[in-house]
Length: 284
Ligand SMILES: C[S@@+](CC[C@H](N)C(=O)[O-])C[C@H]1O[C@@H](n2cnc3c(N)ncnc32)[C@H](O)[C@@H]1O
Image (cartoon, rainbow, N blue to C red; front, top):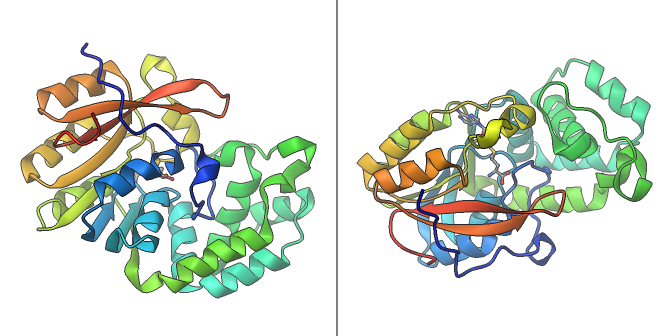
């Protein structure tokens, strides 16, 4: 297996770039923001993010003027409800955040209640995302036990910060579109449109038997070869991230793409190499 060269742009400390998403996303891409800025130096009319999760790349691109508009796609219905609520009822969602009396019983009550509206559902997603261990929304995820610095379930619940992030999203809502569905189908459809740029961050392969994706996301199986083939056929401009697994390194070489590695720190402070893949050489 040929190992990809190290990127000329290092992973940044996530505290040094603006945190724009209200969601804490496992596999979130805040560390990649400098690569995104470099990639989109020449701004794009439309950025498509077919596996959007917490959406840090779409939000950054639109808010920093790197893309005129972003189309965000995710198959997870809880994540979808959050984005719909944020984009269509962002002010009410922010009010609920500011009023929520965060406590274990209040969270458990919210978890039990079946949401009646998109706003209810989006709010529930946001609360569970910020109070479950590691931000994991997949079935079976537990509430954080001791929280950050022993501050309990509310240790990642920063009401004013979240309300501010939601206000920034509301201000850009006419440039952000969310669609619940299959990212792969949207990728195939949009990749052929002139001028579209794609940021592709699928659930990882979970190489080494870890199957990290199945623990982190409710939807965690995609055909990686299919993604590579669709991108290769279309000739579109894309930036894709993956775990550095033999399967992906092989697909990169088979399709003649360029890849660099970036060593980013995971939650346990280990430096794990991730692949940043593009059609042309950008970061080596
Ligand atoms: C690695 S995460 C994306 C993280 C995101 N880049 C961020 O910074 O927050 C992968 C996402 O893909 C979604 N997903 C999985 N399969 C999908 C599919 N077929 N279509 C659309 N979304 C899918 C998962 O729900 C998850 O939110």
